[in-house]
Amino acid sequence: MGNQAMPSYRIHRLRESQRAHFRFAPHVSGVTQIKPKDYEPANRVDAAHPYAAWSALRETGDALKTGDLLESEGGDLRILKYIGFEEARWIVPEAAAPLPESIAAPAESQLDAG
Image (cartoon, rainbow, N blue to C red):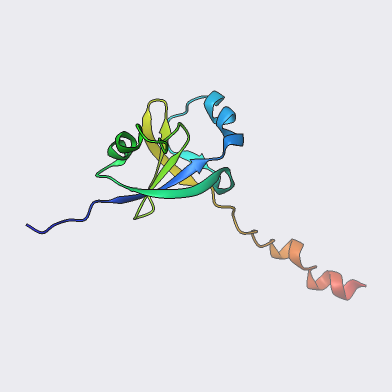
């Protein structure tokens, strides 16, 4: 058997200014939508899975706190909640949708009427 490398997770720390809001927000099931501006990238941790990462860090000065994220090498996000880790997804601002033609440019007949 080959020697497989231990998965590595990038830690994203919830900004302190957002912790109280996160703490008192109601728990909702499903994927948690998160804003990149609310997080600061931190160090990495090598662990078999998110709970192993939490366990490895909990007795250190870098313990994960509720609201912190773990990002796998594949880009999957897990957010630490009071009940454990749940799936999370970055909220990506949508590109400005193109305006319908009728709004973007006056109709030809309107241009000729003037």
